[in-house]
Image 1 (cartoon, rainbow, N blue to C red):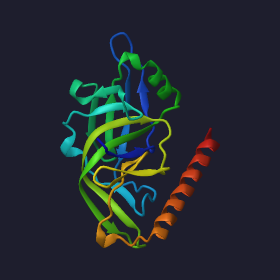
Image 2: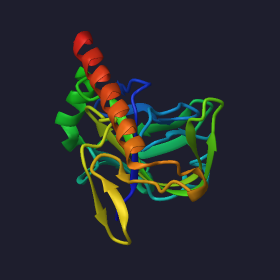
Image 3: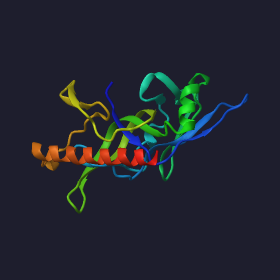
Length: 211
C-alpha cells in the first residue's frame, strides 16, 4: 500500500533508559502543526491542529526507517501511545528488548528525527499573499510513525504506479494539485525542483557544519 510520507526534525527525541522493572521509553513529536514545509512539487504544506485526532485510536505502528520488518511499537499492544497537543503529534514508545542497536543509535543522536506515513482524508488548497500555493492537511488517516536518520527533503526520482499516481521514493504518493490552482508549465516545475534541491544542499551543509 502506497502512502504519503512527511518528516519532522524540529523536536529532538528523548530516551529514558529502562531497568529490570521498566522498559526503555522514547518520546518526541512525529509531526508539528502549522509548520510550513519547504516547497515540494510547486507548493508548500502544513498540518492543521487536530488533523490526526479522528484516527488516534486506530492500530498504528512505530517502525524503524519505514521497515515493516522492524516494529518498534504498536498502539494495539500499548507499546506506542499517541496524542495531540498544541505542538503536534506527540508519541511515547517502549521498544522491544531486541531493539538494543536502535536504542543506542537514538541515545547517541545518530537517529534523532521522525517520519510518518498517512493518507489524506480532508485537505485545503490556497495561496498566500505572495502567490505561494499552500496545501493544508485538515484530516489524515495515520498508519505509522518511523524513526529516521536523515530525512531527505527532496525526492531524487518519481515513477508511476497504479491508477496513474506518481510515487516519490522518499515522500510516497505525490498529491495532485487541483485544476484551478495549476499554473505549472514544465519549466515552472523544474524551477521548483531546483529550489528544493538548493534547500536540501543548504540543509546538508548546515548539518555537516554542526558535526
